[in-house]
Image 1 (tube, rainbow, N blue to C red):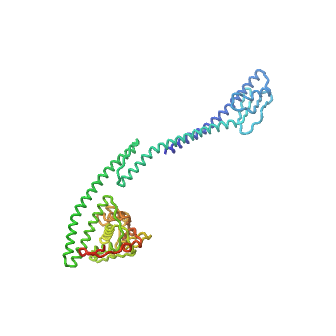
Image 2: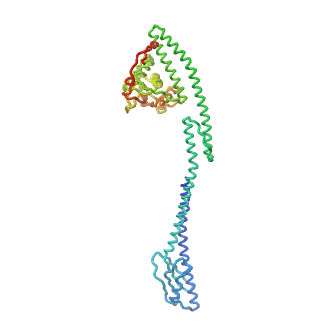
Image 3: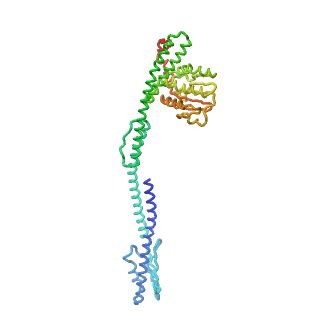
Length: 434
């Protein structure tokens, strides 16, 4: 901006000055020649009045005036009663000429070459151009100096804002002396302190809540294990086992939320998607059957994925629950190969009316819901998927189709192929392989 302002100012003032200066120099040379011709005319009039002769030799003495910046190359005098006298060589273009007529009718014509006048005009223009160039250079220097004085604090201010946005340690930036920037920096410091206080309070609340929830959940899981162990009815044992798995998943969800509040990364592991599918089938199949709907799981990829077991189970549970509550017809959960060999996609689709058009582009925003719910499930699922390096998106609105993209392991690194299977150990009627 400074360079632009200086350039415009210099051009607006410099160009007219150059033109006006050139005109003034040219007019000055022309005026000097006119004064010379008038002086010669006065001298000739006086000689005529005194009767002194005027000849070629006299004119030659007048042809080289000392007070002019140029040489008069041709002088012509025509006095009354005398012949026309001309001295000097003809002048080629460009030329300056002046005609002076005296009171008695004496005519004096002075001619001179205009090259010296043109050179003076050129010298003036060159000097003014050099002045303009120096002015521009000084303006650029001042602009660079001023911009560095402004840009450096702005760079530090941007870094402080970035740290504030990423919830990092609050940076301390010294005042730069520019009032507006210092005001913004002080406000950022105050905002960072408020955010730090709120984050500390939220983390403390999450820690307290998780501690208070884990204690009754542990007691509940122990009671369920006792029921599963001592009950003789298979149906009761199955229900107790399913409830126990739900309690374990809820405990893991609480731990994941606590880790998220602390900024800790998820623990990714290689797992088979069929294990997650079997768990979700046991959890939701009965609910779908009560609504006379079908829940299908299809593993087309047959490839291990790299993800956190509890997070992936929670994300799938959120999508299946939404399909159960707001969808219709058959709900299909499929695992397919991605566009590359290093990825797989989980697709959840039903046969319902889909997502309303007014919230289609905001479906993953907190508080956005087309059915009066809290609008927290899908935003939380998005955060959890991103925590394990995946991506969730709405690939089709009507009917609703959600896609979860995950990293896959090469088939050669399948845990069942790399790690040999151990013996089957029975723990409270639950069979696990170690």
